[in-house]
Length: 84
Image (cartoon, rainbow, N blue to C red; front, side):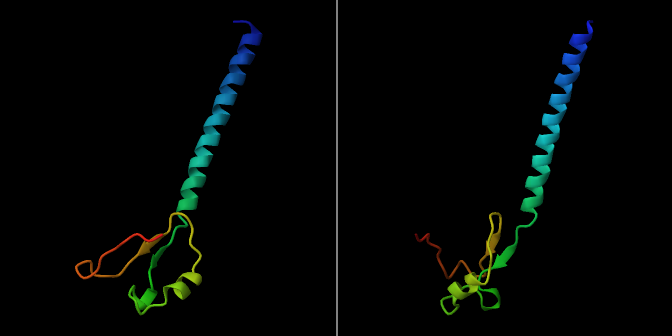
């Protein structure tokens, strides 16, 4: 095999490995970012009901994509509706 073909083959392998390292790095970074997600109980100790000032509660939080909001309520006595 001529030397120039070996060089092209080596460069091709090097570029492929660089792409693979980039993909793995992005996956690890994505996993690290989702590990920062938090779980919030809506209303904290007051719970989620009409007596809780949820606007004030929400202003004290910094929400990010991936955070979970937990609602402490009994579904037998309440219904959920999506509001715009």
